[in-house]
Image 1: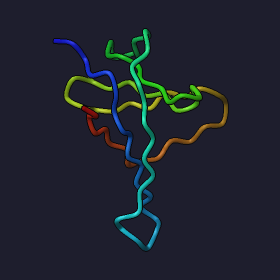
Image 2 (image 1 turned 135 degrees about the vertical axis):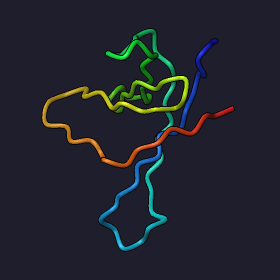
Image 3 (image 1 turned 120 degrees about the horizontal axis):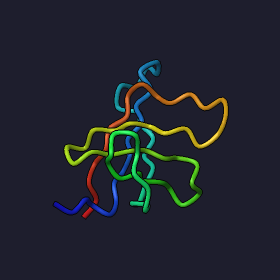
Length: 79
C-alpha cells in the first residue's frame, strides 16, 4: 500500500479557553523513514517533521535542539 503524499498536521492547544483553536501545518512525504519504519513528512521549511503511519498515527520528530512538541497532534489526509 502506497502512503499518501500530503497531510495536514493539526496541533491543538489544550490550555486555551477556545476548545476549537488549532494550528494547521501542511506536510509532504520525504524520502526518509522514521524510527517506526513509516514515512517521514515535513513542511516546506523542514522544521516541522513527523512520522505518520498508514493509520494516520503521528510521531513528531525533532529537527533541532530544544523543541517541545504539542501533546495533541493529529493528521488529516489531503487529497
